[in-house]
Image (cartoon, rainbow, N blue to C red; front, side, top):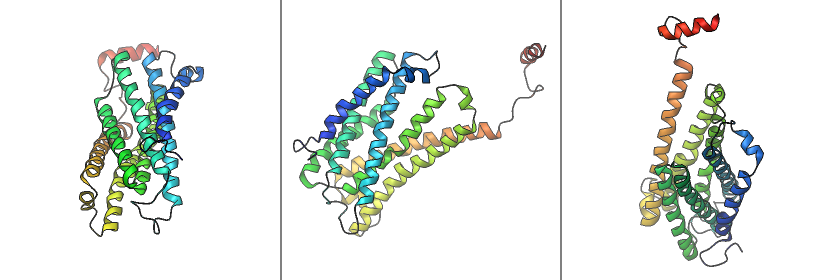
Length: 277
């Protein structure tokens, strides 16, 4: 049994302990330090280790979510009341990861003076939603299908962090076609798993209740509606930022002309001529 009390899955304890332990192990690995340029500061190493932990968590969540969605016959089992231990496992692991990662976010602010208010708000919002869900889970075991779908939102995270890691190695990657490919994969994957996936959950609820997808959120309970709606709009904001960066990146790489000698300032021409000498 994955539950050691009515409200605390073992996966919650695992997320709170194993992820910080993995972070500590990674910080002591020489190959992790060798990945970044020699001039990288401590904050970069910290950030890299944190992203590796995040990618590990996202991979576990995605694989488990796919397993839940693909191994259950949803034509015979109700999407809201089907009983499975995978549901509290996923919610507990997500809550444990986000809680310890929020602590790391505060530590990063204190130690390095950097941090993202948007990421912090996202973490706190999902923590509150997950904590409430664990409580509700002990009463009616709601929504295993939707927990599986929400777990798939982690699919884009390893791509995001892989891109950051390659960008940290220098401008060779920044000016490459590989970066454009990864940017495109990230934007498409993010849209599919976080925006389309959220819409699909509304469609599935609507199909069950016999209403349109846009009516469904108002029929599942106010607390669940607030949680899912908040996550949806936050994901739209994130995707809009990614899309804006993608458009700018593609425009600069494919449509901006390289500077010619006639377009260079006088000072740059002098430097260029001296290099040729």
